[in-house]
Length: 216
View 1 (cartoon, rainbow, N blue to C red):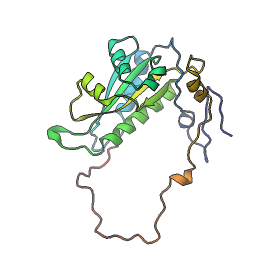
View 2: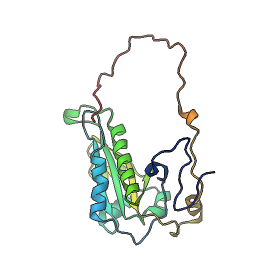
View 3: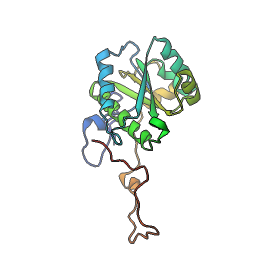
View 4: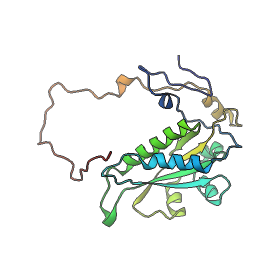
């Protein structure tokens, strides 16, 4: 059985993994009195800044909107209605975008992947600092693009809700029940690609035309 303590929903893993990973989850209930301190916010962004990226291109961009600011209201308005039911209580909403083209319009084909790594680093730092992050794909990308003047090379990826967790927060019943529900994942074996016994190559293997090494 998986631990379903609402304050510590530790994942059941086949072998031990670091607690920062095993205990991370995505709550919707937030402490409505919590304010995100400047040093905590900076730590989250620094963790993201030092994520690896192709050729050290660092394609991620962040727009931070603290609760109570006009920009927070604008970003909140772009969220899907289901997310608006709870995300307004977050201390900060963070829009994450990826620069998918560099100088001169040259494509950066790994920008979305790299941006995901930066967000993962941010989320792990938040977990270490006793904060919770809920990542949202449900938002109006065109409203965000137009409302914040994003150029064509910037692709909105996700909006993060950041705050201290509070499972006693006044959530609608359909959402409150999710806060204490067990966390589930597919079995590890279902996520592994099968290895063909005798792979048949019809062409000579080639590196991608835009290949660049992944930076440390």
